[in-house]
Length: 612
Image 1 (spheres, rainbow, N blue to C red):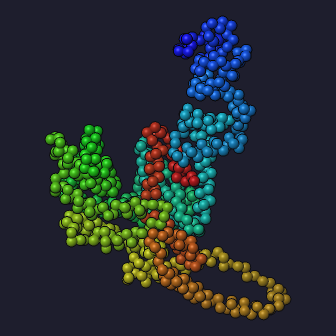
Image 2: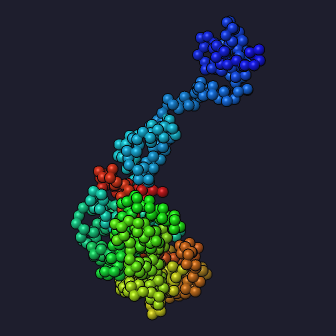
Image 3: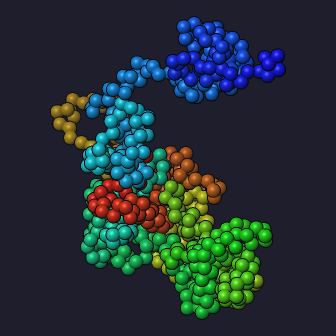
């Protein structure tokens, strides 16, 4: 009766004697089965046939009838394929030879990774990195940190340097940018970047150096250092079209000492124009001061930040944080003001809840001032960034942008407040004055003329004839320079050969051509003038199209103008490319890497910027 009413429990079974397998957690014998002849499943109580302690049938029974128990059994026993295949066994015991191709490939890849991604050299000694390499390839033995520091990085630098030297040897015209910088350890550096356009009309920028510059930063020392740097890379100074620098007095004088054409950085000039427009105005100073206090309070108090986030949700305002100002970036001030105006309602609600903080709430006068400043400066926020790129033509945009400021963005409007009008006027007067220089105007006119998007559109009517004459003159100069090296041919014949030579019918035409050689200059002049006029008659392309792509297609139609385009369109409008080198340097000379030697800093910055 018990068997029919109450099924047996696990306690009614006994395990197999002298057995260590976990399979017997699911099978057993009845207590009265003293000889242990019939194996029973503890789950379904069925008899499972097995001989001489073989457990295969038992595991198969679980697998077929009790999948969950089977999975549990597998997890307990840890049943895995323990036999190692021959490839894995070989790989685990036989490392690559030091000079093998595979060993070199992986080492080169690690070196590239460290240099390009600006990683510290001790990365190769960290356990996590080592484990990753062992997982990827167990036969690879990673070299020491010293090897990467003293051998691998140096070899990669020399290889990259040779490649760039070969590239620069084919450059016909180039422009440069430079700047000075001090590292975290107050060590002074001077950067130099070269920009050029290839024959296939690809704009290239190459970092040449971030050199240690411990001398006094006088104009004379800077001028000499720049000449030495250009000479060290085998660049001909006469082929340098322009150098773009900031407006520091020593930089300006250094360019004059070297007799180099200099273009003032548009970003720095715009920054100074804005600083000049808002300085010495008590209303603006007070409003900016209120903004800084607001940003400081919410930056240093997590409670205030949390309260602001909650109020932003209640008022359906964007969940934005306040922006702090950077003294050297005028755009950061504009973004700070815009964010304060955007979050004005939320800020007022948060600060009103605490009597001690109500003095931070901007008054309506402060809001009026901030709105006037924002209305004046807001439209120009994107221009600095747009003109700071080094992967596209930027110099030809300077003159159109200046005209856009005069005719649209900074034009006085009836709805403008007196403060807005005053800021606009001061900025325009400053920019127009600084760009009145004849040399600067000539450079910008040439760049604008050679850009198929603009041509003569932004050149004043009284200068169009002069610009056209200058272009024609430079086309002639380029042609004469290129023909000087190819026109020299030997003209020596012996008298006896002249006597024996028979005149052919074609020789009469050849003689006629030689006699007319005196008129070739006139013919060349006509050809150049026809090329110039045809270019001017060609419809301008869309303002968003790439002028270099246009020149690549039309360089055969306008060969002389194409050379001038490569000459002038390579000039960067700002010195940002050199400043970016210092951003890279800052990512290399970190707080943990302040002991890096200047030569190694120069090498690592060079690789980080030039590796492809």
